[in-house]
Length: 313
Image 1 (cartoon, one colour):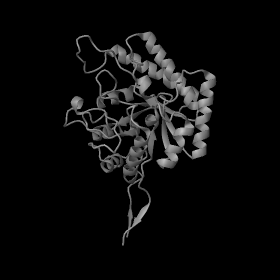
Image 2 (cartoon, one colour; image 1 turned 135 degrees about the vertical axis):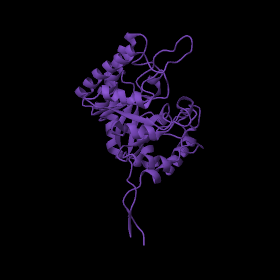
Image 3 (cartoon, one colour; image 1 turned 180 degrees about the horizontal axis):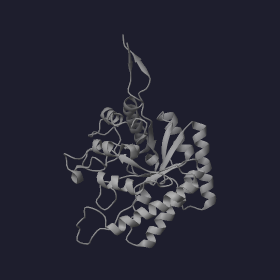
Image 4 (tube, one colour; image 1 turned 90 degrees about the horizontal axis):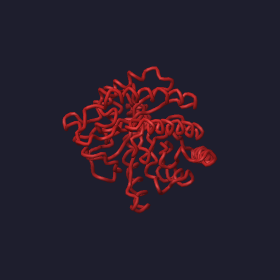
């Protein structure tokens, strides 16, 4: 009897693990292809700052294209990384700094397209904290309207650059947007018809954050079910649902690879890529990181990369 196996989910890795280590394509490409056995990556702008001089950026873009071709790697997308994320970006209280963040993103689109990367995204920003320490349930209406206007302009610029898809990564913080399913649905509706579509990147450490959502409500199923048509990718990490850990799968946590892959298939998202996104202390030794990554991929591949038919007699 022939039994069809579950659909294969494209499995890749975000290059966050390379920060301050394997910082050029001739270093990260052989690790991804030859040591991890992957052919799909997501560039982190922690490795390339789109505000660098134009001649430097042109060489960086060429190096990425050449390495990707040489090692048979697809660079699916580029995400903002940790460095730029530390700023308040498009929701900074000072409008001039929002303008700078908007220009930063436009430069990121231009660089990505030059490097042969046609999808860009990440978290959008954060409003400032109040001096009383109290966090509201949503950002102010004026801030939201300004954000949507900026995203509209960014979509038009992305279209001019040749970008085909933009991503918002929801984060589990009240000062960022969106952090609930309802907010994400509203944003998707308000951005419908953008020249370049805005999609969501949902993260296993974000949607499951129990201190914010509560133990009964935290989980990926709600996000998958409500936002499936607007989800463009998934970020994988090991976590304990108590913080956004970004551990690899050599750590003990609450995310089971088989269950994670099954949930993605259950909601019709098997065609959306899943990227392992892990961060390491800068002082940790390189060899232990490579070993941990290999172990993690060996756990994820059987769950996500199933394909073909199995013969049962």
